[in-house]
Amino acid sequence: MNPYLVVASRIQYEFEEIKKITERIQLGWEKAQKTSDDLYIDSVALNLHDFYNGLERLFEFIAENIDGIKLSGNRWHQELLRQMTFALKGIRPVVITHELSEKLDEYRSFRLLVRNVYAHHFKPERIKHLIENISMVFKDCERQLGEFCQYLSSLDS
Image 1 (cartoon, helix red, strand yellow):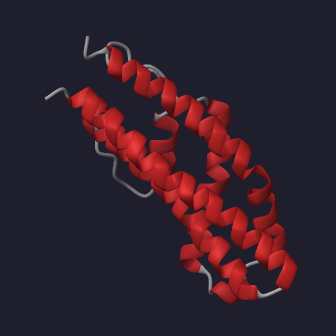
Image 2 (cartoon, helix red, strand yellow):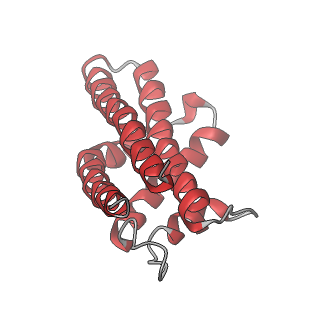
Image 3 (cartoon, rainbow, N blue to C red):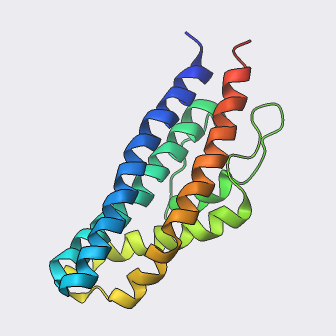
């Protein structure tokens, strides 16, 4: 079995899940705006957490199965995101652009907040910025990871 096709297939599968999460984020936000119910804010925050978590799982899978590296240490989450912006000569091209990684870093930071703050302390204005950008960030991820999958599929030939 071709390991590159395994990685490409995993990216495609996980991305369908991430797409569903993105839709849930937008739906939850709409309901939060209509009802002013904080429970919808909690739902949106959890789904924003899952959005980045899903992407990070993909980046980990790429790092372990293509790059041959399992990062560790206090800053491995930041380093993993940064690693995806580098081409590794003879191994792989850039997975995502530096510009996209900066946008994703906001979602990574928010995920940390979700993990460390009581839900009733979430601030809708902080979440609003992430929601306003989620469609564009998702499309950029979809395009760039799609290009990476095409590269991996070309290695099968």
